[in-house]
Length: 254
Image 1 (spheres, rainbow, N blue to C red):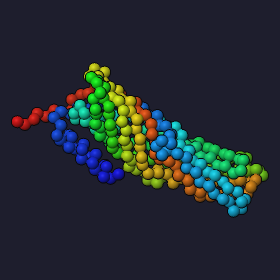
Image 2 (cartoon, rainbow, N blue to C red):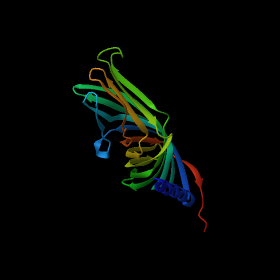
Image 3 (cartoon, helix red, strand yellow):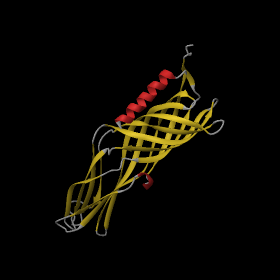
Image 4 (cartoon, rainbow, N blue to C red):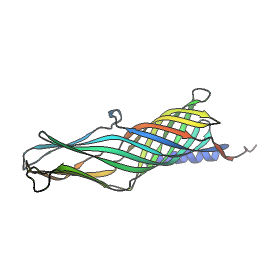
C-alpha cells in the first residue's frame, strides 16, 4: 500500500512538472455500494459451542447495500492523463444474526466514514467524445467512531429473556485503502464531462467487532465473541464535472 502511494505521488508530481497545460475541473459524484461475492465480499460466519447449554450458536456478519456521495477535483494534464481527488461521505449497512437451534435473531446497523481519494487516470479514446477510463490510486479513510447495536426478547426478569448485542470498536481513525476501476467518459466542451464507472476498494478491517449473547431458555451465555466485518466493497460511480477552466499554461522553451 505504501509503495502504491509513493508511485501515485511520483506520477502526479511528474505530470504537473512536465505538462504544458493543466486544466482543473470540479464536479460531483454518487456511488451505490453493492455487496457481491465476485469481489470477495462475502458473509463472515463464526460457530461457537457453549459449554453450559451444549448448543452450537452460529453468528453471521453480512455486508448489505450502501452509498456514497461527494465532490471531485480533477486535474487534466493531457487528454489521456489526469489526476483526481476530492472528499466523499460513505454509508454502509450490515446485518448481524444469531442462530441457536430453531431460534434466529438479527439486527441491522450502519457504519459511516469519510474518504479522501487520490487516483491517476489514463484514457483510451473510443470515439469523437467517448473515452475508456482506467483508474488506480489510494484513499485515506477516516472513521468517526465505534458502532453499537442490540436486539433481543423480553426483559431480564422473564424466563425467555434473550439478549444479543454487537459492539464494533474503532481500530484507527485513519486507514489507507487501494482504489481502482474503469468505465466510460463522455466529454463536451460546452456542458462538461459525464462518467459511468465501476470501482473496487480493498482495505484493512475498520473495526474490532465483539458480540454478546444470552438466552435464558437454554442458559447460553457468551461474551466477547469476535467476528469480522468485511471492509472491501464494489460499486458503480456516476460523476459529472463542469466545463474545465485553465489552471496554468507554460510555453515550451526552445
